[in-house]
Image 1 (cartoon, rainbow over the protein chains, first blue to last red):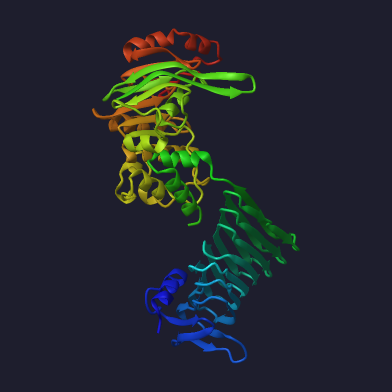
Image 2 (cartoon, chains in turn purple, yellow):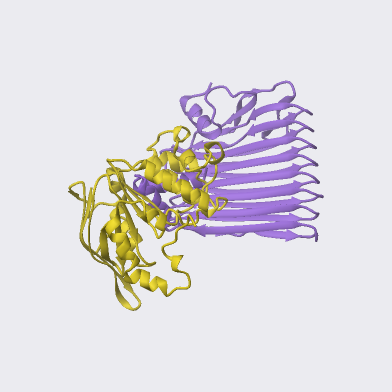
Length: 305
Length: 248
């Protein structure tokens, strides 16, 4: 039975306003509490360690929600999820974690995902991190994702963390086979004393594989961010890495995009920018009637949209 | 509508204090259209930015509809009905044309707004366009003008609206700006274009930070053509360089 707090966390994490459509698994405070499989989409608990296997059969279309919520202080949860998107399937997968920490202790979730997007399949993956709570205890999220995009498959990953999470280390490794395509879009806003680090390594393994890694971030207060996306081409692939950040207050941001080619036919591009909000942008919006604060919010909101 | 009383603006530079605006006195009346013209760097845009509240004067008073607004910021002036279309509009990464229009419309629906269409941009093609480097200089300029028209301020200032705009769009732009002018509005256009100077009610010539000539177009324009500004211009390779007639 979901409490009002559970529902709030699910709304923020997975945009759920009731029972999820499609297949789902809801994990709360280290335990699976609700689950539904559908024809072609089976969700089963792992037997050897905490976590689930999501198996999508060939040619199946649908949505899968696998949110995690944590509602107490001084907790640590480690979960292993394996997701298999069968050949030619077309799936929207909404993951993510919401933490409510009411106390002084640290509440931490470490999620390890292995995702296989089989030949010709399409996956849209959304992972949203959310933190709240009246306590002073830290809210910590450390996701680790291993992704395989097989031949002619497509994976789109939207990774979002806007406020609320104190510490994050995100590690993502992706392999893209011939004709496969990965689009990864990361959005982050940190404030106060928060720290966030994102390491991405995407390997273009085959002919005509492609990857686009984009991060947009805003650093406020005394928060610190590190982005280290690495794009490696072992074959005739093409890739683009783009890191854009708005730096505010006393925050610190490091962006270290890396491109690495082991094939003369590879085409790799990277760009990175860190800068404050341009004065003319503020002036323009204020000349349309917004206050300074409203203008700043509009610029940041648009930047992270 | 608006009065500038003895406006001065000085800036500190390496070579000492620079007087950018010198004793500007000006009265802009409701229902009239004005052109601010003069050589590059003479202070036309700075005067407009003083009116909008972007550049605070170091001396003098700004009055708007009987109220001393000298101490008011940009937002307060915008909310009182002053609008300014930038000479070089900024770009916004992540924001769309729709977002900017909806700010101008104070939350109204951009889809119902006609200003994009008026300026020759199809809303279906442009509302979702990002306001970033993917837009050409001419497109961003037209969007800027459409945004000011959507805002519909009582005092509207267009800072070199023709800059970066092709000839066909320029003709359309002039029609749009002057068709939008009403009895209860005041329009100020900063321009070097003879075509625009020929359409306004009054011309204000600004040179070296001060107003050197102002008055009804029919009286002032012939004098400007014989003035120092034009004499300087006549030493240039092309006479039409400053006061260009884009109709060719």
